[in-house]
Length: 87
Image (cartoon, rainbow, N blue to C red):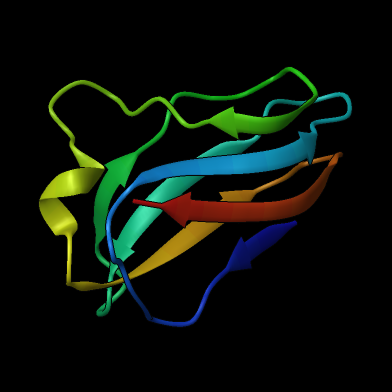
């Protein structure tokens, strides 16, 4: 399954999730308001509470502060319980 948020004004901070990935890794992407991919997180295959997302080389989520973005979570077999970003 894929979950895409509505446009959110990113106020800064590290993206963290509570997740049970199940049998396959979870992927996280950051999209512009026009749905263009701005950055991709490294796949996450461990269960946990408040796990930070590590971004692929060359991408800094902090550079998008005060912009409208979307988060996209691809969850093949697990569960995403929540996500948060706090400055």
